[in-house]
Length: 93
Image (tube, rainbow, N blue to C red):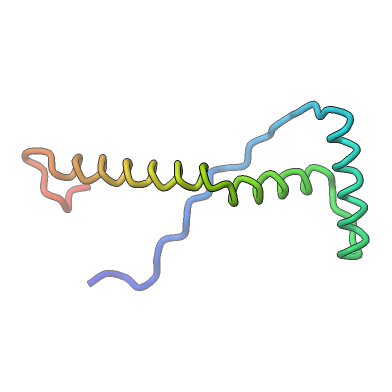
């Protein structure tokens, strides 16, 4: 019988990304920090804000979501093929 508790998802480790922003984008990011402070009543570091904006943008992009689904499907198919190799029982993985 299987466990009810699922394994925690394995989040890849954080990655440092150094970027040079165009002046207009940097100004908009500063303005957004002000908006955030006014709305939530607290400061946010520009690095945290930029990472959150990028993360939310990527999570909502329909093309990226489709690609991720396709990759998961393809990886699942590959894992099933691996389990079905001759001389290997499906439980040996």
